[in-house]
Image 1 (cartoon, rainbow over the protein chains, first blue to last red):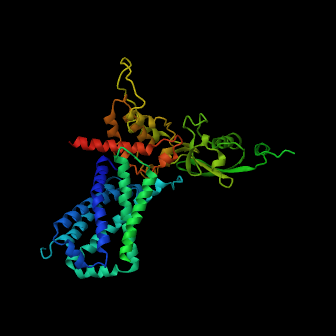
Image 2: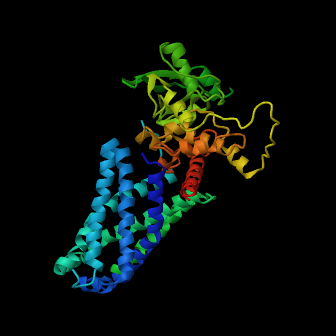
Image 3: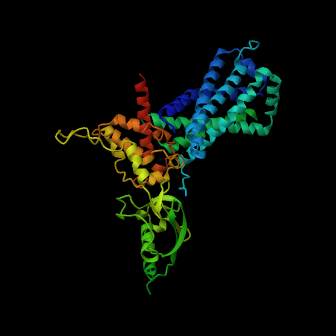
Length: 114
Length: 112
Length: 252
């Protein structure tokens, strides 16, 4: 159910996300000091090429990684197989990618450019 | 019939699976809330002030812990699989848990 | 008067009985049946099963051969854990005078305590476990250095006797019936590191399919339960490493 190709995708996206996640956690610990506001977050992220590529690669990697992880769970715990399993994998991956892209654009696209 | 399997690396597997599943379920909610930033920033602020409640702070601490334990547990697995050295796996798994507690604890101290 | 030793009291029948539940039936259905078995000072689970078959119910079906932990045919679930019954002392597993004995997990049950080993051995072959010689009998015998790093890897798993304890202990096998399992994959790793095996690439392909080594979650129950103290989890990690390397190599 996991062949070499899916395994490599799973591991490579994990390796990409390892530094991104640690960066994300570091930003969280820094940003929550004194509370959060939409203005504060957007002031840091909107129009920033760095944060766009940071969270852009994060969204791509996490959609792939989570879809493969959920595929394994769906097969082992609820016995999904064949086309249903393939559909489930693609469905979760694309849903996460779509929602992630929407959030990415909302948070990093330059204000007034949409 | 199931074998008794509460040994350290089996528990590490369960922690990795549970944290992964929880994070995957949290992600759509996370994305959905953030996407309000563009259309209706007031709604995002509304949500952020809702997140000021202690119970939500505690839930956030839980999420940071799950994220950290998934990252470090995953790094342990990849090191075991790909490095030509396997190390003391039980200690490394315990170490991953320890680091996750430390990181999420730091986060908790910042929000209280 | 000399105090009565426990050995003597057991022989006198003074130390009571064991309450033994034994699986009766097949994969299609069945139930645990209770037997009262005389408690002895020294007895193994296999002794208990044999006593039941000899003295209580001759229709009880079970499998054993060597009785000394060499052949790997008497593995069963004892109180829910996979064990060699011939090497499991009753005293070690007895809980409040009771013990439960069932057929190996993760395999079809033919009858009572006899599991159908076919899927286990079929996967052993599917994983590339059959030896392909690199030379004929007419060629000179190439020397093998036992200290060589690759040979050390090959030797690590060579004591496997295919008892299927690891296969029964593995939760990944339980959830994913296509998964080749720890024993077959460890065999593949052993052959991959064997200088006299001629088809290493076939092994890498055989363990890279849908049921291959990449399904392993490294929970390590195989290594915890192996009665021979082998380490299939690390062997499977080795296969993952080599297949990942070949993945990059073939891309170039």
